[in-house]
Image 1 (cartoon, rainbow, N blue to C red):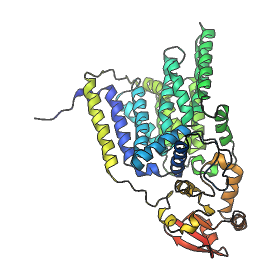
Image 2 (image 1 turned 45 degrees about the horizontal axis):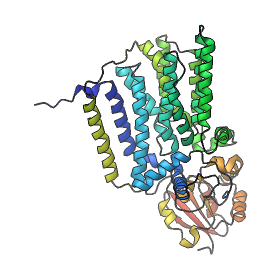
Image 3 (image 1 turned 180 degrees about the vertical axis):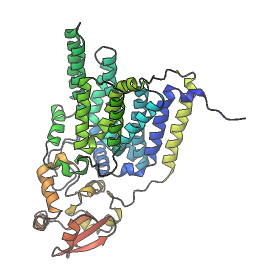
Image 4 (image 1 turned 90 degrees about the horizontal axis):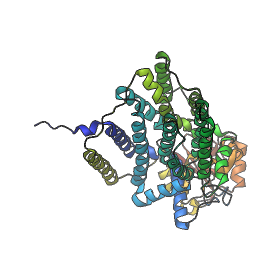
Amino acid sequence: MALSLPKSLWNVRAIALWAAVIVFAIVLFTPAVLNDSDTYWHIAAGRWMIDNQAVLRIDPFSYTFGGHPWQTHEWLAEIFIALAYVGAGWGGVLLLSGAAAALTAGLLARHLSYRLSGLSLVVTLVLSLACAAGSLLARPHLLALPLLEIWTAGLLFARAEGRAPSWKLLPGMALWANLHASFLIGLVLIVPFALEAVWEDDKTRTRTMERWALFAILALLAALMTPFGIEGLILPFRLMAMPDLNLISEWAPANFQTFQPLGFAVAAALYVLLSRGATVKPLRIVILLVLLYMALAHVRHQMLVAVVGPLILAEPLAAALKAAPRTDAPRNGFVTAAVFAVIFMGLSALRLSLPLNRGDGITTPATAFASVPASLVHTPVLNDYAFGGYLIFNDVRPFIDSRAELYGGKFIGRYLQMIHPDKALLAAALAKYHVRWTIFAAGNPAVGAMDAMAGWHRLYADRWAVVHVRDGAE
């Protein structure tokens, strides 16, 4: 007798669940999700706040800026990540990251299915998730992605139904503001949709303006419900105004010398819209162009296009493709829920049962660090930018790490000049900060300069990292 799956596993709701399951599995079993130096110090910051039962307001980690004011604007996300790590190790961090990514994918699939179906839905969803793939890292922004999706969908639903956004979105804004600075995008998105609503409503324009304005004010107040208040709103602007910010990899412009899903997705969308004569409302075009500019200027913003773009384009794409949304309702919701609950629990159990050891890697100089004598570990170190988080995680105060808002553009600029290398500036820094050992990525130009530096010698080297120590320091 042939085995057949219940039809309820292929209805509209199940499509979203399948998308969530696939993304969940990908994240759980892709160790590269952990390949970001920020993950290390986010865990350290979360543990500090849990242990001290307070929100971090000054830097307790570095020795160059220790004691300086530091606004831990992602404090709640850091506590969640730290709890995941403390509770279940690196597998727990992947579970948390996978859950956030899966929720984003499931919500996006569900909301797109209101306009698209069949192949058009699948292709749109795949391109969207491909554009977001570069952002699948165990960091606070991943925890905020579901809120970006819910918020954008909520604004679009309000416009489609000719009303102001639901106040039910406001608690999400308060949560978002405590998770990640991308909440600012949510606030900004209110403006074009409000203007569009006022422009198109020629009968009750004043009332429409009042309702959207009230929602905007309440959203702003919700965003201020953080330990930092107005400073939480100002910080993203300060960060983006920093000089030499594009020298940091995640703030670098998109590089199309290699394959970029974003370029393919934009080309595909333009082809469909232009060849089929579809129209997009003017202010929504403005939103898309601004987000596209941000994604081209800074690779970290591609996740915004990946989530917001498809939701805005779903309606014109459906019109262009003459796609009708699927309307088949689940006949047996309990069976569907039970099957997918078992799948999610099975994947989670499998992930936790498999060992996950963090060996040497681009942000993890484990063997090189282990070679440093105990007498030197807690003395001043000059480190690779990408290794700062790992050092913090191991209770070592780094020279620098990836908290750009703490160090500032001027300090980061001098550091980058020093290691590329300005030998005089490098020697001056070694003397000024009483550095006794260094640890750089094997391909860092500073390695050669340290080899030639008088009074220094190599202690250890492998394919990932090189350690130098001052003569007589061991």
